[in-house]
Amino acid sequence: MKLSYLKSSSILIIITISIIILFICSSFKHILFQSTAWDLAIFDQAVYLISQGKSPISSFLNIHILGDHAALIFYPLALFYKIYPSVYWLLLVQAFTLSLGALPIYYLSQYHGLTESKALTLSLVYLLYPLIFNINLFDFHPDVIAVSCILWAILAAYWSNFSLFILAIFITLSCKSVLSLTIIFMGLWLFCFEKKQKLGSIAIGLGVSWFIISTRLIIPIFSNNTASISRHLERFNYLGNSFSEITQNLLFKPWLFLQGLFNLPNLEYLLLLLIPVIWGLSLQYLTPLIAAIPTLAMNLLSQNALQKDLLHQYSLPIIPFLMVAVIMTVAAKKSWFQDNKYIITWSLICFLALAKYGYFTSRYLESLDTWKATNEAINKISTKGSLLTSTYIAPHLSQRAMIKLAKNGAETFDVNQFDYLLLNQRHPGRESSPELIETIKEKIRQNANFNLTYTKDDIYLFSQKIK
Image 1 (cartoon, one colour):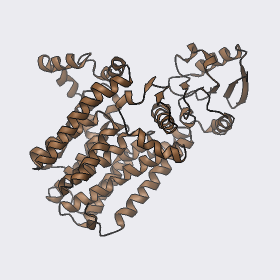
Image 2 (cartoon, helix red, strand yellow):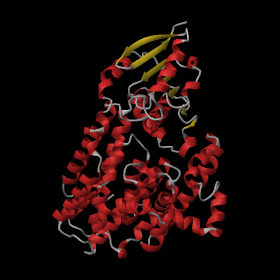
Image 3 (spheres, one colour):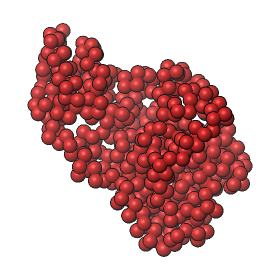
Image 4 (cartoon, helix red, strand yellow):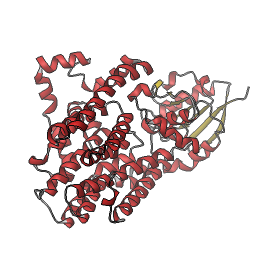
């Protein structure tokens, strides 16, 4: 790695400030009981169980965590929990890896002949891209680690640094099985357009190999393969109910795909995705976006609205290639703006318009009236016993083998399987209601095995009597 390119400490200062801001924001959201079971509690539980030498069976998904996306990255993440088990490790890793993406962008800019000030400017463009801030607030996802790793892989390809290239790809693939498609298409881009045939071939080979291993071996072994596939395919059920049916329809009913692609939600999504960097895109330098085709196609064809915004993780693999396209355009002096102040101004305007910092003065304060009581109730849970609680409380108590959510359907649970039930009737959480919580409370009151350990401000903690 040619660290001699780094002639100034400015980029390190920028990255450090970004890490601090992102970590504080995500931590504050968590403290306010606004992080959720889906997905922070899921991953916190898995990493905790791994750190304890236990099988990471998710009591939320009812499968081994590798049966979800074959995300091997959770195993090295568990090393942090061996130091001290805390969900804040995940939030710190997220803030660190998202911010660290600015460093390869800085190097890539200089590789393409841009000045240090321009390299710093483009690093800021990346950090101000609204999705970077927004995804940091959306719990934790291993996809965030892949963003900077993909950028490092691209940089390593330009530097012809074989070791860094392989390491970056391995880490990327360990984050999520579907990222193998991104690596395959990145290899195609490098092979066909960047004249990096050797590294491009390696990326294609690694991507294809991991796609086969993860989807045909790891996920089927660690999950009910049919249920796991159905959970993801339901977003595309208008195209078919299986991979083979979707492939057949692609060949014989292509109009289904055209209808799925050309609609107003997709147009809005593309505008949101491109507006923050539209000033720096040119048709002549869009070849890096070849690598973004799998992610973009899945998002456009999906019926899930969450895949068509700048709030969730689904668009993250596109960002590295968008930024490379911008760097190439700016280096060729084909961008709308060349002056740094205009570039930063555009990025700031887009950030102010699309980043969700305003949530800290609105939706994140909605349950402030039960904040104190919730903390007091949590402090009365003294063991790692099984628990039923709300989606917003779950990430604070997910370091246990058994935790379920008080959501629709929970009224049918056998309450005797739980050591604790912590309920918030005033703010019951997603897929729940005050009426559902009342039903669960009545069921517990009729059960002689439980005591009401704590109640205040519509917060109720029930504990099983010691036998």
